Amino acid sequence: MITLEKLRTYEAYNGDMDGWVRSSMGKEKSFMSDADWYLIDALLMGLATVGADLASPSFVHEVETRVRASTADDATRAELRALAARQRRNTAA
Image (cartoon, rainbow, N blue to C red):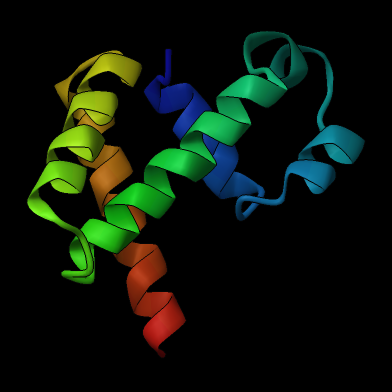
């Protein structure tokens, strides 16, 4: 389950899983797994595809379903969407 704390950690390392593994200490490593990291990557990729209007209606539904099933609450979903939007802007720049 993705939480705000996990998203903030992901963003603190700019999505660099190797950097997180090498640099994180105790608590950061204990509450977040590689599977969480991969899930955040996949959710962000799906949201980016949807946000760029490159997705079919069925893919949009699939992404929305997965986001709802994989996040802890509305605040986490909002932050995930905001992170996806920031990444799209940074990529476009």
